[in-house]
Image (cartoon, rainbow, N blue to C red; front, side, top):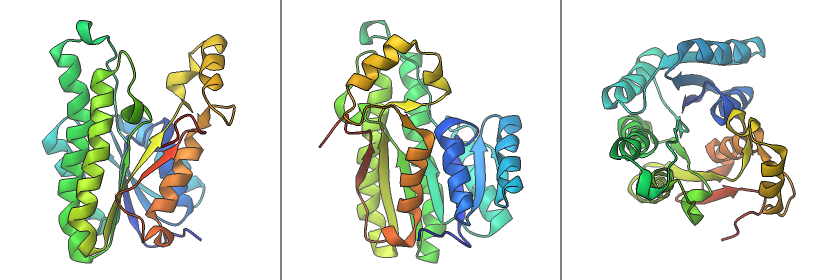
Length: 248
């Protein structure tokens, strides 16, 4: 079940957190994983861990806010591996401020990385996926893109836009056997949330019917499923992995 032998997967933001977990789980199912992010040192650590566990991994430096860098990452993947079957758009940043305090550069930075970067990667990967008549595009959005969140107008707009982009791409590429889906994590235990006080974590947990924060592996498991042949009849969908925090 969910084997990915022979598949080439490009994962952005793979140097830590959710992206790292996704890369490791895809590799564990047999995919060759191309790990992309801005910091090569951290990426190499992830790739080395995958290799040590018996998997296959490669690394590419890529800045999702830079169109040329994103296109180069896809082109390099094709040059090195001859195909790209799975694209996981996970890279993202935050520049949180209340709307009235948010600067234009805060808005632009988040939109450019979280939404435009994903669009650029999808556009670059679409041609090879269409030609090979097999592809999986999986966008990591967020529960806040479905429900909103104060102080994150830029982030929420980008993630909501990513959901809309996913649905449009799904309709455009379905005839070529390329699916596009989004995963929307809820509150997840990552390095970003590790610094929160126990009181804050307790308040978060009260909003979650399952009574715990999620893990990066929870999200990675959903991605592996959507990347697999078993999910071949699923496209244009939003898979909410949030412990019941939002039910739609």
